[in-house]
Structures are given as structure tokens and as C-alpha cells.
Image 1 (cartoon, rainbow, N blue to C red):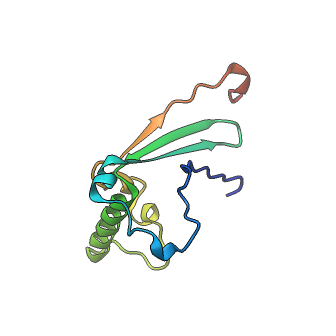
Image 2: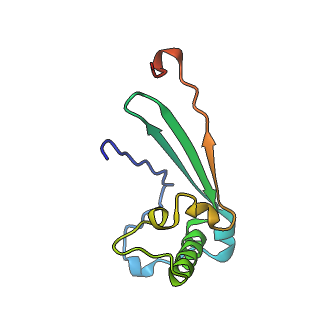
Image 3: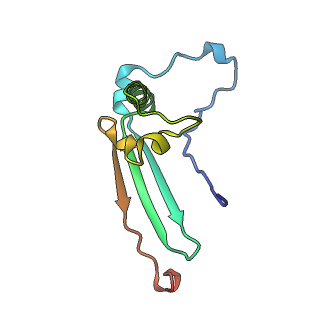
Length: 119
């Protein structure tokens, strides 16, 4: 895969600049509950066709714990393949949406006439 770019919005002061041993263990339950996680994926094909989807889920800490638990449950139930696997590769592209309170929404993209793919 070539030309993959990742952009992340980071609030001021999000990265520590000192002794990391002095950092708190992480956000409280209330802070986690108040902050959902969102990710946007946009793909442009070689012919200029575009697709965009948005992931909306519980906060990253909770999602990670729930996804790890679900993955372990499935592996113990026999859903395994030898070698390295991504969750989507092993459990299917809808794996993320099996996690409680998680949605992936496809967003239509309207391109100006001069940017539409010519077929």
C-alpha cells in the first residue's frame, strides 16, 4: 500500500514533557464515559473514486478492553488461523461493530464535476 497518510487531532498539552512516572494512571471512569472515540477513513482509488467512513465508539480505553475480551473469547471458541492476524483479517471486517455501542457509518462524498471519475 502506498500513499497512506494518517492525521490525528491532538489537544494542546496532550503529550507530557517530563518524568512520565509522574503521570496519572489514565482517565477516570467518568472521564472515559464523557469522551467517545471517533475515526474517519477516506480512500481514493487510482481512478479518483472516493469513499469515506466514520467509526464512532466508546472511548479508546474501554473499546480496547472490550475488543481484546471479544477477540480472546473467539480464539478460545476456535476462531483461529496460524500466523499473525489482524482482528478484521481473522474475525471479518465487521469485527469493530460487534463491540458494544460501536457504529461505522459510510458518508457519501459529492465531488465537483471536474473531480468526478471518468469511466
